[in-house]
Image 1 (cartoon, rainbow, N blue to C red):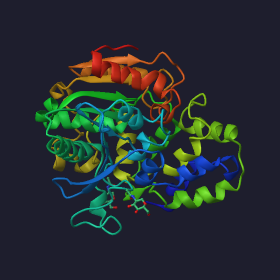
Image 2 (tube, protein in one colour):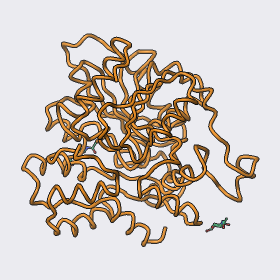
Image 3 (cartoon, protein in one colour):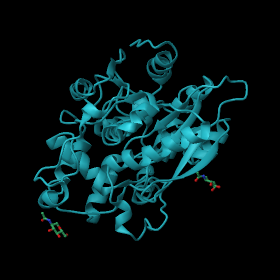
Image 4 (spheres, protein in one colour):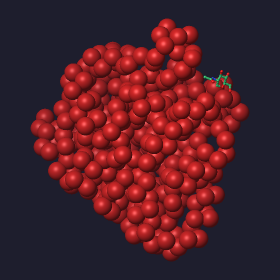
Length: 391
Ligand SMILES: *[C@@H]1O[C@H](CO)[C@@H](O)[C@H](O)[C@H]1NC(C)=O
Ligand SMILES: *[C@@H]1O[C@H](CO)[C@@H](O)[C@H](O)[C@H]1NC(C)=O
């Protein structure tokens, strides 16, 4: 990929707050990786390695249930595009998804998609030199990564089902899995889709416009937005700007979607310290194609006939996705627009839609926002425990 795109994306995506606005605690938390952060926050963890059918070595984290807890089904948290398993702990105790589930006695497992900072490994391919390593988009994150991780967790815990909480592209991957490998539908008791991205034709996010634009050109590339890459250099130079939290968030959210300061001041630098976490160019472009043409397989243009036996990429067969989905959506989501989520809801045979009463929730607030323990996790836990949808 031409360097200029990297620069543009880098600058578009991550405007970094100045050191001056970091508290000591957020300064420390911003620089810790998953295992260090979870320990700093006072929770136990395990690190597991799972190898997919196509040879990717994934890191899966676990926050094991406390000893005083009665046994519950495992719960798998799966992050979305650009991000990593860090998402479910970044906002800290009392707010972060995985800490709240752990506080409620769940056996919490955390996936890290291939290519992200914790899963940049393969039995034979080298992510730094082999282009083939980066030849994937979200369908492979479903049929290989989600499948391998789900099987691993069920084997390890001797359970037959788990709960799945996915954010953004972490919902799309599971939908593809349920569609292409229907035997997985019975392995997921309930899947919760936070700000689910499938059809994104109504997305207002400026970044999606960039994705649509680049999908028009025949440019190829491997990894973009890697953790500690070009972004870090941009970060260091932008740190000199000494922007206030107010200015920083305004700039960031004019690009990533207005969030009404849902992401707390002390969490903001921690978000910036952990995102992005690495993504394939193909996955990035695929969402640009979807924004233009709908929720379909990757468009290989002239090669579609050779690959799919037809000139346009096939759609996914959602009628196969029999597992229970609970979709949580917000009117203020600039990426997963309510109209698009409603379309998904109408096509999934076994789904319920919950539109948040809090109208300020943005796409990222679903994983980083201070409103999570008020608007999101109580609904998820209430659904699991009482089978009630209260939103
Ligand atoms: C986090 O960093 C520490 C110290 O560098 C290292 O020992 C540990 O393996 C890292 N954890 C992960 C998950 O990469
Ligand atoms: C795209 O570029 C590749 C090599 O860079 C070339 O082989 C291929 O034919 C091009 N495709 C189109 C549609 O131009």
